[in-house]
Length: 550
Image 1 (tube, rainbow, N blue to C red):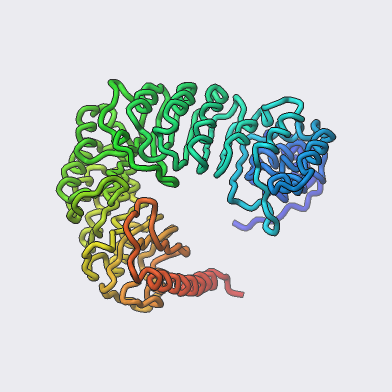
Image 2: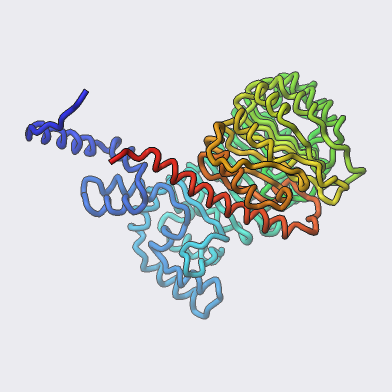
């Protein structure tokens, strides 16, 4: 049915008035501004008095740096000079803070709900970002009218530092619910941080720690801090942090739903943190569990605490040393038969950081078959020193078992120092089968054999494509047959949107680099350039097809 635009002036005015009235409601205006860019928010704050306060609230709500706040009361040049030990910098900064407009600082600081600091991130592209040292923070606290609590309404804090942890503390408040810290300085500074943290954040629900410090060096202070977080729902720690005293403490937390480990930093191997036992009635609400353990111990835990393991929706197990095919199969068979509610499974059977014995035998496809009863599976990550080769029939069986699978990475980082035949691994010819059965795949990771041939028909528009593939992980693979152009074009032909070819290793990999790795990288980067070229051609062609005729 055809429609015509109204020419009634009264009706037009009525529509405009309704729009203006809607934007006069603070709640609706705040929702509208939540989708705006920073520049748009700044403009709205300047052009309309009615919008100004709401726009400023949104503009200052989430800061990806602490420096916009600090610049309200101090020059970053002075802060930089202080870090460089420039003469008189301390006195000049102190004088500046004495005369600072603290009411202005207080006005904006009350708007901040989340803030970040990363010592490696540049605040401005063309200038050196100053470090935030304890001396500058001490001066700030000394002159700040409210003392130590800089951000009274802060709820989320992310902080990364390789030095003193003292500057973190004034940015914390009793309202903080989410805290993520990356502490790569000495163990004493990390220990000092947890000693000072205890009692400061009683309402914390999420805590994420990244550090190289061994848990034995900070165990008492860490336990003391965790003991004050009665409302904790998510706890993410480095590997080898679940020593018995830590497990005993967190196992009774009534609201804990996620207990995971993060590999951003990798502390030393700790035998005492290889999970062996759990307290009775441990983790009443847990649904996501990550821990270090060997398969026999993990299987024994799953049998003994079946009530916990059968309700899990996510499990992440790091064996910390090489695991043979039969040993892995026995555990995975139990996992698949008993833990059928699992949505996400991550199994690291790679050569770990602990004491190494004889290199294990390769995994077989039966490891995947054993998990087929987990019909709801969305993510499966498996790491092992040997590659695991699958064929088109295997992919079809995987699709039948796990129709909702969107993340699949299979042994893409083998240890190339082992005697692995150059034809061992997957063929690129398997990708069209994945595209056919998993059009909604987001992340696919495989090890491709160097000497496996493949074919590309030249058709950039096949019947079956990945609709949303973000990443194709190739791990430590070589470009098959060195055919970078054909590889790039083949991948482009199977994708509706341009994916990233992820080259190299993840935090699981601890094997030595192979002698030809530099050449492999160059070949994959070249394949990526051909992928980009083909995708531009493909997307432009489809855009022309959709363009209406003149």
